[in-house]
Length: 65
Image 1 (tube, helix red, strand yellow):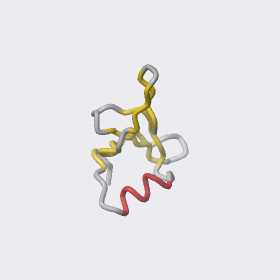
Image 2 (cartoon, rainbow, N blue to C red):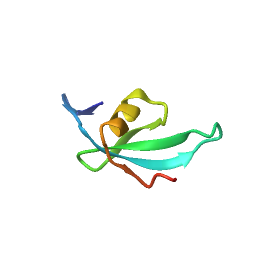
Image 3 (tube, one colour):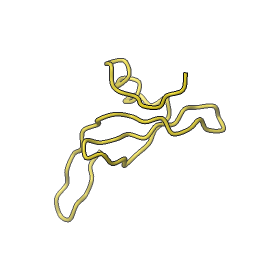
Image 4 (cartoon, helix red, strand yellow):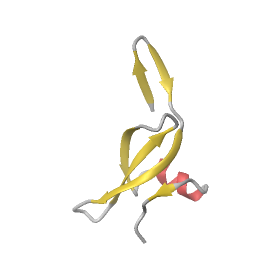
């Protein structure tokens, strides 16, 4: 993800994902939290980047059992 700040761009690194909700299709939705502590995007549990994150031991906060 690239965040535009003025004329320069900065690539943020993912710090963690936080569970937001389960949608009407019964898919879990997560906020992607960047190293600056902000969320600029979200994804479902089917997102390839998210699945890889979990497989590699990445942090997921607030996930229901």
